[in-house]
Amino acid sequence: MDRPNLDHWEQLAAVHGFGPDHYYDLDALVAGATLMGAEEAQALRLATDGAGVADLDVLHLQCHLGCDAITMARSGARVTGVDFSPTALRRLAELAERCAVSVRTVEADSRDLPHDLDDSFDVVYATIGVLCWIDDLDAWMNGVARVLRPGGTLVLVELHPLLTMIDSADPLVVDFPYAFDGGREFSGVGSYANRDADVAWTTVQYAHGLAEVLMSARQAGLELSHLEEHLEMGFDPRGTDFGREADGRYRLRLGAGPSGDDLARPYPMPVLYTLIARRA
Ligand SMILES: C[S@@+](CC[C@H](N)C(=O)[O-])C[C@H]1O[C@@H](n2cnc3c(N)ncnc32)[C@H](O)[C@@H]1O
Image 1 (cartoon, helix red, strand yellow):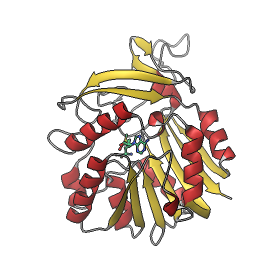
Image 2: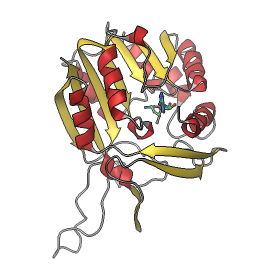
Image 3: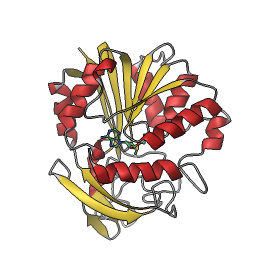
Image 4: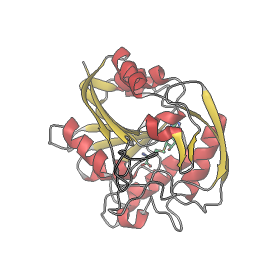
């Protein structure tokens, strides 16, 4: 168990969704809105050949407050939320009650999923900010493969490792490796959802390059069915307005654009990826 990371997530789970939080608009969720991003909704459509998750057994892995778990339950899925943070799961249970949907919660480490979940799910859904907390990627993937039914699907929508390398575009600060190279300790205050949140933290995070993620899925017996690198996204991963452009989309542009054109901006680099893989 990574104690600093659990402490960090316990703190964030207690403050997210309260006060000026630009990420978790829980009143809107309770009123019927979805907080699921467009890329995640598209990934679920792709994974289910357009049919959606109605009547499927879905595991929302590292669900945090479980806003997407609630959206999937509203669509008719039988949803289980797994997280190692008891506070997050308590918040999810309260939210589900306010939204009048049923979501089962299981407190567990995602590197060591309980065996009573084996062969239970049609979809494992894990998105945005899940793998950077995981040292042992193969343990994570093997657990995912184990809890999927044969033919079941992993839907992973994750921050691109190129984006996570970059602390600041201007001046350019590259403070995180592209691929796994042990843990890196970070300390700070506030949260990506509310920079002013009254929390101070230390975390240990791990890089996982795209090839490592693919190869880890493969060794776990998951067959790739879709891989996409997104050059823009609709949300701000850090709560800093990092990369926000005039059309409201977030892009990562570094350095200069094509030479000879003073107005040209540098081409955008990948910020997000979608991986869909099936248990054979
Ligand atoms: C960035 S959040 C995921 C955000 C989620 N996609 C959302 O929309 O709210 C990461 C989550 O991973 C959980 N987590 C981190 N390490 C974990 C581990 N080893 N086992 C289980 N959960 C873990 C944290 O408690 C946190 O809820």
